[in-house]
Image (cartoon, rainbow, N blue to C red; front, top):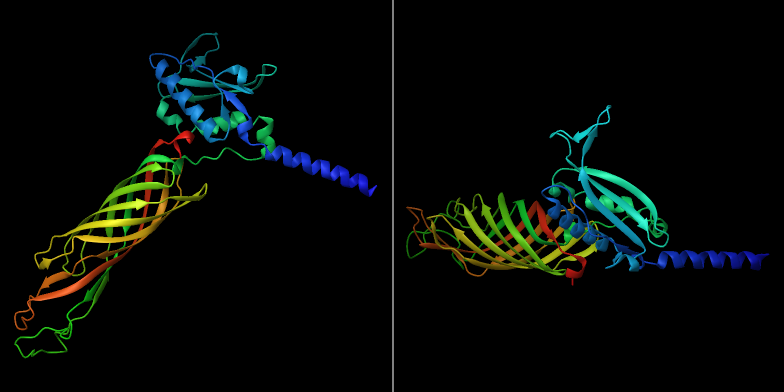
Length: 355
């Protein structure tokens, strides 16, 4: 009896593993040419053909080039949204309602059996970007393998875009480290006469608000380049606006469908607008890490932590009338930054374009 139960259990485990071991790549789908409606029929046909093939591939299914090689047909078509009146007449829906209907039929090819048929209203093609994956899942959820696998198609378009536009509010903490040697004070003659209470110099540390706008090009799955422009509203040393441009070489890591980490190296170019500054370091190097979480199908919310060290000293004028020496006060400058923002992506990278 025990042996019999053991065999049954083994067979059950084997079959379960066999079913779950199969990937969606084993399910072949063919999307026939699509018939649109009206003056934009060609645009509709091309749009839905391209998008549903992309979504089907991204969901893990195999797209075939003919119905004879497919397990299922995903038949799509566009028709007008008609209102049927009690007298049997039909006419186009009023302008405030959706103007078109996308008809979706899933057909099993081995016996030509229609598994599911449903429709979805729309007016503009652009509005369908956020619904295409949902509609695909509504259809493919009726495929037995999909039900056994127990998982919905993964929407990871948010992290696989060609281009991202980012905006963030930043909180840079700027450090000015004094480099005055053995005379960290102001004095008025060659002997170094000074008032240690009033004119002693020290390091300066100050946080202040800033804002960043930029764009990021993701040309490889594991590499992207961002160019951004930052405006710091008040530099703690000169009380002036600081404008900087930064180039970031990023290396995206995608451990989860809802999370992404982007460590990066950075090169910064900065301009100070204060008249009290004699010399200001224009070039800085550093790096950081951007932590992103899914923010819809088009982008991500992110937190950015970074560090930039500038390659030359800051030289400030000594504007004190009584203790007018030295003429220049020098500091080393570096910045520890924190930013919170959102980046929105454009142009999906297809599965075969993600090396």
